[in-house]
Structures are given as C-alpha cells and as structure tokens.
Image (tube, rainbow, N blue to C red; front, side, top):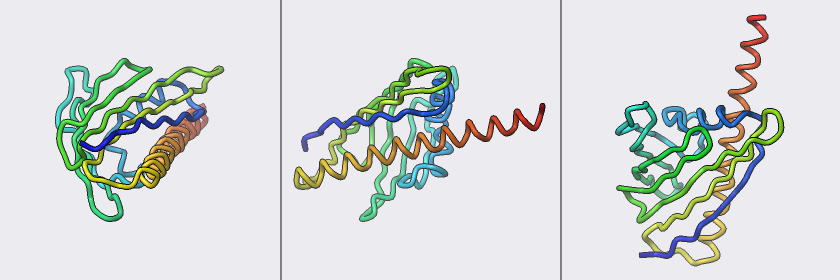
Length: 158
C-alpha cells in the first residue's frame, strides 16, 4: 500500500451553507464544472434521495481513472466519502461547511489519496495539493454561479 497524505484546502464562498450542500451533492452536474470529471453515475441512493454510491471517471491526463465513492452526510454542514472500488487504492475525505456572516460559507475540504503506484514524494505532494485546490475553487465558482443565476431569476419575478 502506498502512503496516503491528507491534504486540506479552505475557500470562502459567497453563498449560504445550504447552497453549498446542494451543489456538492448534485453529482450529475460534476462533468459540467469539475475539469477532470468526465462522467459520474449515481449507483445507489439513500431513502432521502442523497447519493450513497457514486462512480467517477476522471481524465488524469496520462490515463482515465475510475473509482466508486461511498458517501455519508450530516446535512447541510458535512459530507464524508471513502472509496469502495476502482483504479485508485484508497480515497477518503470530507467537506465541512461553516456559516460566515449573513450569507457566506467557509468550505473546508480534506482528502487523503493513496494511488496504488509510486510517484516521488515531492511530485506527488505538489500534484495532490494542486488537484485539491483546483477542485475546491471550481466548486466555489459553481456555487457562486448558481447563486447569481437564482438572484437573477428572483429579480425577473419581482
């Protein structure tokens, strides 16, 4: 087993916690806003409709990687995941959403990935940090885009 190093990245998002939770759990939309995600398939859902098992296909430049994550939730403030199948040896992580000000959110993502193959430590660490940072910032952009669209729809109705 290769060593997994936990990475963490936090972003301030100009949207409420509920909007962040709704966006992160909308797995069908990931290919539209997350650059490495080619495809997602919700394999199984909980009785409340939230996804329990989600299959991902990612373009990792050198090859396409497939894995399945199992999710558990504490709506709307937290979700956690762990890998249960696929090309990656192990993945575990979480998102925590904390309210900030009137309508903002501090979103913190933590993730540990064990690829299952060796990459030199400094290169692996740099790749993992950049991938996590990019993932969180793309998520932030999507949440804020959805919020702006919702505000625009509310203005048109007024």
